[in-house]
Each structure stands twice: as structure tokens, then as C-alpha cells.
Image 1 (cartoon, rainbow, N blue to C red):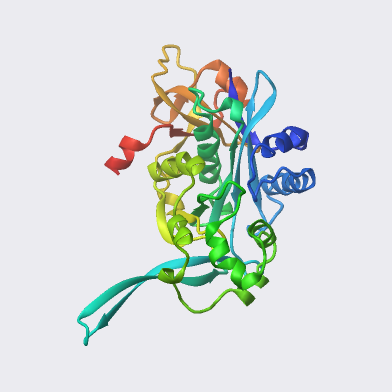
Image 2 (cartoon, rainbow, N blue to C red):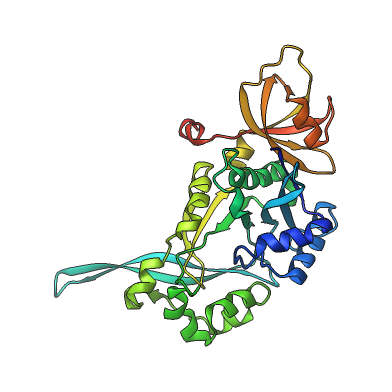
Length: 345
């Protein structure tokens, strides 16, 4: 089978709805109207028609032979502005000591923060359940491809990249952290509050406590999930860590999920990637493997074996056809494996 990552198109809507309905992501819900609006926004973003604080880039992974959409990923160019700030809890430590008792304690506290000049955010990572655990590592492909696009268009994104990871939730989809904290200050159930926060932040700023919150005062179940990653999200966590993302000691104010981040230039697919021209070596030996992204107006990316010589690269004809590129075109090439490379950097 052949797979290609590309910008979403309106004809993908029905299949994207079916894909999203397999999951329950708030930034990519299985709602036809919402997804249609996201496709509109994405098409305008790729065309360069939206300002950074409104741009969202939606990528899909297509099984070319079956003409089926089997994965997605999303980049929000700027998450946090004057109109819609980025909010989070910073986890801090407070040392307290009693001279009379000769006893000291280190307390963890949550401090509510607002960022009106926020980072780029990645999310919306989905892979059709019937395509998981394939040898092509499709989740990794659809995740890494968006960094190739960011490398090709650095002016469209911020100097920092954020990813909000999903924590453990109850079997009913509730957040123990929200029940212990957020619900007490807003009166809203978790799903409703998190959905509302996608477009409205005023209730968070107005109702959330401004003073530090001592974690020791929270319910034990809430403390247990704070900053943790749910089982289904652990592969995404490990991938992010392998390419340079680190835990920021920040959590989502709704579910306590951890925030991971990195400087854009230090993310390994960007840092170790390079622009090269396609060539046709008669004695090509395709020993290396990496992600190839197109540098033209239409973005496409694929996992490919390649032969890199200086500023030129040769890839199999079938991959060139999938990417819709020709000899002489500029592409961005980046390694597909990073664990050893990270240790060396």
C-alpha cells in the first residue's frame, strides 16, 4: 500500500467525519458542520489568506490505493492572543518551614496563567483503528509531516510549539481533576466546559481562582491524574519526547493533562531536515529512510527510501508520482528515526 500526507480538501469531509467519530477529540470532533468549517479555515490557511492568530492547518493521511482517509493531524498557528488567550496552570513549589517545630514541607501549588502571545499548537492526531500497528508507522508519519510543512514555511508559525496531551479519564469520559476543581468554580460539567473554552475564555478568567491552589487540598483521585498521560496517548508522548519536546510543568486547567513544548528550531524533524533538489541517479541505492515534503504551493509528504548526495536526493519513481513532483523540484527531507540522533545533539 502507498500512503501520502496532504492538506485536507472539501471532498474529504464525509470520510473525515467517519474518522473523527471513532474518537472524541475536542479540537477535531465528529461533527459535520464543525469539520466543514475547519476544512474551510484550513484551505484558507494553506492559501495564505488568514492572519497567524486565525490560521489552522489540517493534514490528512490518504491510502492512495484505496482512496481512503485513514489519519489526520492539526497545527494551530498561534494558540493564545489578546482576544482568545491561552490559559493553563503552572505547577510551582513552595518551601515552608516552622522554627518552633523544626519541621519543613515542600508544597506543590497550581498558579493560573494567561498567555496573550501564545505558541503554535499541534493536535488533532488520529489514525483509523483498522490501520493501527501497521509496519509503516502511520501515526508517526501523519505526526511528523506537519513539522516538514512548518520547516518550509517558518514565517507562518511561532518560535515555540505546544502540545496538550490527554490525561487519564474515567470510563464515562469525565475528568477527576475537573470534578475536584473546575466544576466547583464554574458549575459546568467537564465536556461542556472544555468545548466552550475552544472559543470562549471569559468564564475561565472570571470564575477560576486567582490565588495559588495547594495540591494537598485536592481530592486524591485528582492529584493522581495531574500531569499524567492516558494510556492511549502514551505513544504520542514518547514520539514527542524523541523529537525534542519536554514537559513544561504546566497542565490543562480542565483535565490536568500535561503540556509539552519545544523551541520550533530545536524540533528534530526541523533541525535535522534540509531543502534539496530531486535528482535521478542511475546508480541510486535507497538505503536511507525519511519523510519527504514538497516545497511547492501544494503540500504533500510521504515516507520514502532515498539516496542523498550533497544537495540532491533520489527517491523511487512511485514516490515521486505519489508526491506529484518531478526531477529538479525542491523538497524538504528529514530522517524518520530520531532516538539515536537526539542522544548525539
